[in-house]
Image 1 (cartoon, rainbow, N blue to C red):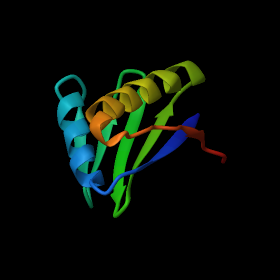
Image 2 (tube, helix red, strand yellow; image 1 turned 90 degrees about the horizontal axis):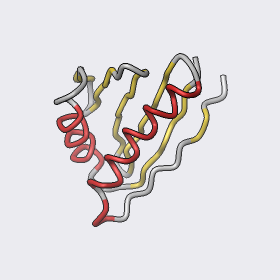
Image 3 (tube, rainbow, N blue to C red; image 1 turned 135 degrees about the vertical axis):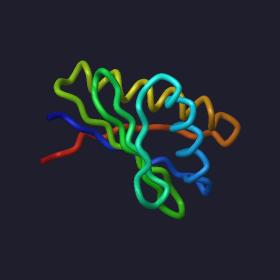
Image 4 (cartoon, rainbow, N blue to C red; image 1 turned 180 degrees about the vertical axis):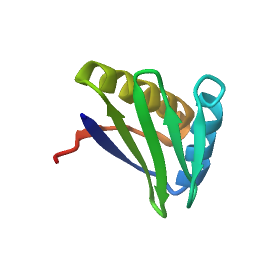
Length: 97
């Protein structure tokens, strides 16, 4: 299954993870994970949000490349919009197995 990860530098990772999960949770199922983390289940795949002290980590997985691109777009576009004031930038890197 294709997957990718984005590390987004921010001092308020937990706040952005919660905001993103809450916002997208109106349309897709969201599961709370230990340590300020969330799993979002999209029709196209899955997104997992986790936090560290200085960054938000987003991991996207899907059954094919086209579906992965959809998950990446939804997560990245919404986070960049929420973090526009702080100039958050999402760059996805393909996970290597």
